[in-house]
Amino acid sequence: MDKKYKLCFEFVPDGCWYSNLRSVMPGAWKTIRKNVVARAGGRCAICGAPSARLEAHERWEYDEKHAVQRLKDVIAVCPDCHAVIHYGRTSLKGDARAAEEHFMRVNGCSYAEMRAALGAANADHIRRNALPEWSLDVGKAADYL
Image 1: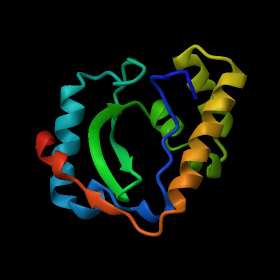
Image 2 (image 1 turned 90 degrees about the vertical axis):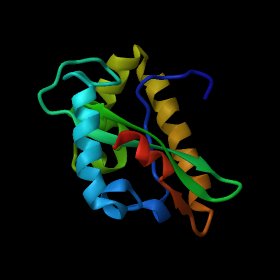
Image 3 (image 1 turned 135 degrees about the vertical axis):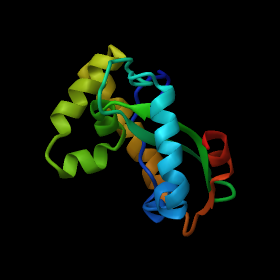
Image 4 (image 1 turned 120 degrees about the vertical axis):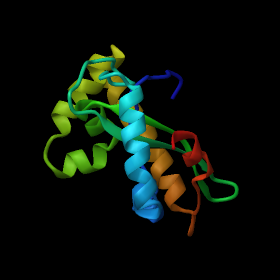
């Protein structure tokens, strides 16, 4: 995909489900979440919309050569942006269309462009799922405490 979007579909490899700050650092997660939301000043880090209910979202990068899932950032997002990011879960809940519309609105793109971005995210997911086991690097979590 050539175009960069500010709101993206972020599919976690199946082997990395539940490998996140909330599950591996439950005590620290509460502090991290609180700090990230407080720093956001009541606005979504992606779409900029004001929200009384911001959610902390972990952004990961994947070193496919070494099979490492590495924490890159933790940001505060509105529920609509979070639904797009976790599109797989959103789809299972039956809310895919609303998430697709939000993606297009935030990114100012067409339906075809949204579908291409979704296809690229799915291709990344399939490729990453071919790796048998991932290790977790949460060293950056200290930045948010």
